[in-house]
Length: 126
Image (cartoon, rainbow, N blue to C red; front, top):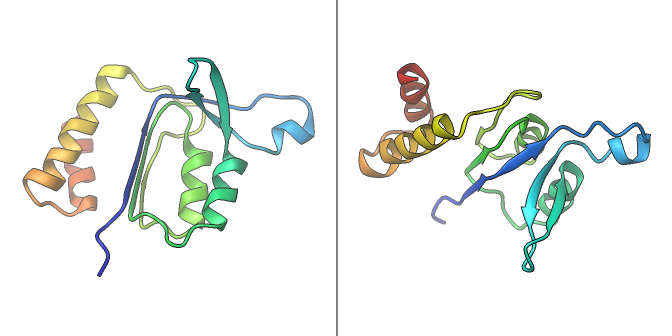
């Protein structure tokens, strides 16, 4: 049995508000930093292409960024069992994101809680 795979992204997410249908069809995006420190956009469609060629999908994906719902939906369609993301158009405060992440991972890895149970506990605490 392979160990579970986790993808965790913490950063900025943006809603794609392009008027150009071709650009808008790429979906919302995450902002990534390149090796030289400039910003690049990683669109929903980019993630979809990567997942289509993957040998296996992760068990858990945590996208800790504003408006990451479209990105999360791509992981769900690819068969990821557990996806944590933020509703489209919703911003999340840094302090809340940090608390959620620390507590969530503590419950899973230190206390051995199942992913769904850990998620529910942290939501109730917040």
